[in-house]
Image 1 (tube, helix red, strand yellow):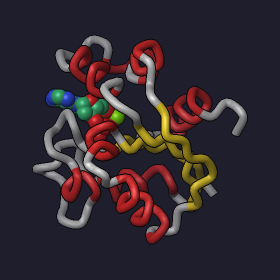
Image 2 (cartoon, rainbow, N blue to C red; image 1 turned 90 degrees about the horizontal axis):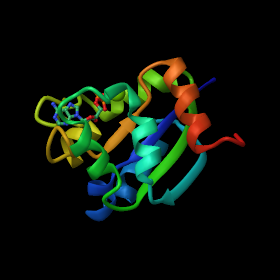
Image 3 (cartoon, rainbow, N blue to C red; image 1 turned 120 degrees about the horizontal axis):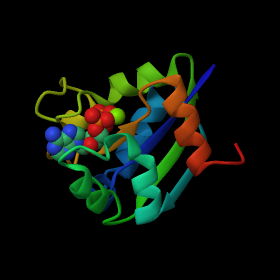
Amino acid sequence: MERTFAIIKPDAVKAGHAGDIIRLIELNGFDILRMEKRQITREMAEQFYGIHQSKPFFGELVEYMTSGPVVVMALQRDGAISSWRELMGATDPKKASLGTIRRMFGTHIGSNATHGSDAPETAAFELGLFFPNL
Ligand code: DAT
Ligand code: MG
């Protein structure tokens, strides 16, 4: 069993899509080990997205992730990391396949409904940041 870290981002929470997204997570066989609705602080967003610090969209990304409440989750499944990335779809909702969460609920490359860890090392880092007691 593998674990990954997921976020339902502020646009999707605001639009009332959290329930639909959680349902899709359950239908796809993930065990939701932890789930919390919370506000992300600027410090936490900057730490979380530290890898993107030099990108032109970094400021916009931090603003956006702190613009409203999010739902953070620890998910468990066989192949959780790649399965959750697959269910989310491509970063740009316009390029995401039909049936993926970002295609259904994302509105823009910068407001793409969900986050998912991209590798075992990032999953461990992100889970540790949000769920230190897991
Ligand atoms: P992903 O979230 O699919 O792992 P990423 O790690 O490359 O994508 O980027 C992190 C987030 O940054 C992404 O979910 C949305 C934002 N982002 C990425 N590329 C962007 C761009 N060209 N313009 C605006 N925001 C962008
Ligand atoms: Mg990424």
